[in-house]
Image (cartoon, rainbow, N blue to C red; front, side, top):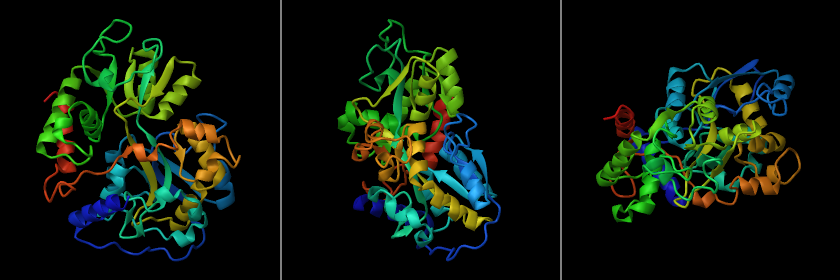
Length: 385
């Protein structure tokens, strides 16, 4: 973790040439009446999708802050929205958070104004995707793996390898996987390819799927170009992916536990697994815009997100892990020690969490391919180039 923190600090300094600032907010005032949040699908629920999951209504009543949510389907979309402005908070994954810090789009957080900070998982409190030189730029929200979702009528047993979505083959039902699998519509999917190559082409010497030299990067792109011939759709909308599994014959894809849970709740023949190559994952952080118009409501919301019952129910709803470990066992919500274990609570060190690739990496100064190339090249992959 110390090495990762050093890399995060080095990346930020390389991008900005600036040292981290101090928190802008030193005391809370009167609630402004609203808070505007950019969030992943399923992250902020008020009972509209399922009446059993609502962690907004009571907050609005007790705080006087109306919660307005703009859903974003990719990290790049979140960064773009925060660059445009008009939002107070964002639930940023690791491949967006340092870009937001480097771009001066988010402000340091005063943890003294968040009483429940002490309850945050120690593995997350100083995580390198939101902490730079000891300065916190966000409040941990939740974390989990990117899973392989599959149709149990096609796969009587869980697939052992990600090869079912990366390499052309006949699936257990005797039919080809061509046109029956999906891939994520985001440049960070290059890391999934690199993770696969770590296991299947060890001679490449990949040690991190986010730190790729030119040869390693070329190999990942080549794998993705081959995958292009198999993919029926590059998904970024969780609900469209759900529909594709229900109605369009898709039987395997990288996904989030959120889609898995909704499909299973709908009685669909769906399950998920983490194959033998391991998985990338996300540890998401609530970050505050540098020009937030509603700072008091923002801090009240960040404190609210750490409440044990919200964390407990959120973990069950999304199939992920709470940033407050007590939420697994204190009976405040739906989570149990068993459900948290099933969601990977004990696998933290096995997940390679999303982070933003930069050129200056552990392989040396300028040795790794930076993220802007991931963006342009992945557009080319999707376009068939």
